[in-house]
Image 1 (cartoon, helix red, strand yellow):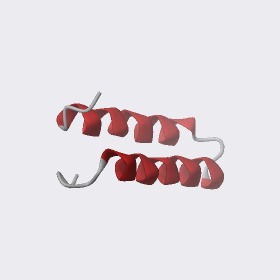
Image 2 (cartoon, one colour):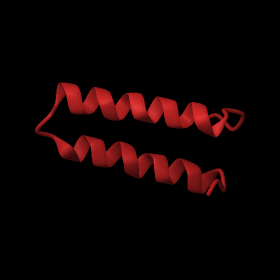
Image 3 (cartoon, one colour):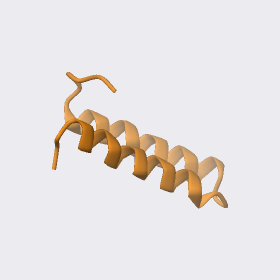
Image 4 (cartoon, helix red, strand yellow):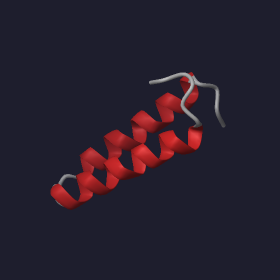
Length: 49
């Protein structure tokens, strides 16, 4: 992840990924879970609460 990317931009990208995964693979909730898990990891790494 880019260290200089604002948190709101990270969230926007992750939301787009969730929407894409849900639209293209509606039966694969694990794809949405993976995006959400990755989002948590990114914010933990950046020390964002």
